[in-house]
Image (cartoon, rainbow, N blue to C red):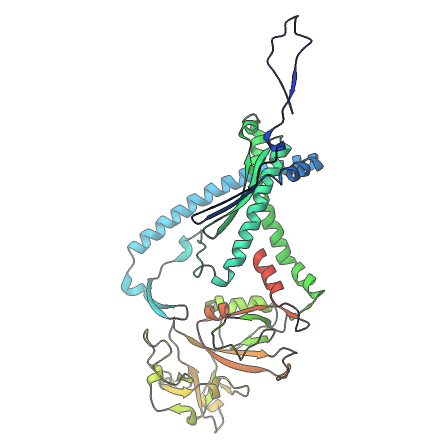
Amino acid sequence: HRIHHNISRTPNNINHLPIVNISPAYHVSQPTEITLSYFYLCYKTSKFNSFFETLSKSTPKFWRIWFNLGIIVGILAMILGVGVMIVAGWKLLIGIFRIGTWDNENHEQTRFVKRNFEEAHQVESNEDHQIFVPVIPGVTLPISHLIYYLIALLVCGILHEAGHAVAAYCELVPITDAGIFLYFFYPGAFVSLSSQFLDNCSSVKKLRIFCAGVWHNAVIFLLGTLILNSGIIKLSMSLTGYRSIEGTGVSIISIEENTDFVGILYPSAIITKIDDYELNDASLERWNTYLLQNDKIINNTRGFCSSEKDIIPSLDCCNINAAHPYGNSENREVLCFRRSDQNNSHYQNELSCRHANPILANMNEQRCEKDSDCDESLPTCVLPYTLLGFPRPVRIYFKHSPWNGNQDENTQNVLLWLGNLKDLWEIIQVSILQPRWSWVPLWIPLVSELILR
């Protein structure tokens, strides 16, 4: 890069106009720095400057078109973003106004938080006033997904800043250094531009540099969406150490420790059905829908034939409240049931405590709509009795993995679990890919998909 000094062109020096070669700071290797302070860790280096410069010079015509597209996307994103912020602010104000005037008596409901079932009261409010959902670990983002979310943030941040760096070199604006940082647990990246050279750029050149980051974010989003929806992950994994069980069920990847499933369900087992909901076509989607959007599903209302021998004289199990979310029975295998004889409305509110396993965790179960549908040995048609927002019994049908030597992989099994459906979704991580051999890592397909999502 050369600059011409402002030397008056007189006859004495017109032939001696000096051309000064500038050696900008980016040609001098800056020392690598590691900064550590309270809740902050930063790594800064100039080692990547030459890489960004070489990349920008490799195909200059391509980069010119590429970053011109970035200007268009950046301006459209800015306009759209301002519009969305206005709408979001308006809806938020409407939501606040509605909550302030809400009739608490008619809209207060009880729900339980996670598996410790601490009582919490919340005012029902229409969530349609929310456009932005904050990422809160343990609330809007499962704790188990936090590490993948942070990895995705770091990768997106690096590619975002790489866009600024390459665009800057394309416009002959050097960068002094680049780096990554960790603030609390939030990761990010940065590049430092030479303000001296940046100030001399035209408006269009500045736009190419400034819009490059959000343009790269848009490209990441499009590529991620394409990979997730095209089946590339499934195809690539199927050609290696995994096989697809799409249409059969979902394969267990991991199970949360210190839960009732440990020692009963094992990794690589296949869950084929939840309650009466078959996990056949689009297995993973159906798994997520049933556990996370169960209110949108029309559930089977058929009852179960039960023997009089299953009845417990006490009604303590039907005493379901905040203090006793599972009922007040000392026996965990005893649940509350209600009669389900559709021909006799008198029986609809009749409650009884019964041993649950012979009724619900039974591969030879008899289903019914009325008592007459049952045989003499199981004469009563019943359904589990639960209250909205409280734990409910869930039947999980599964097959063991091929290398579980103590069990037959073709035999269907069923277990009964009592809890919240969303908790079940967090406890058991699943995939539509099952390892072909026992030594193949279980986590690779799941982690790949979660980071992309």
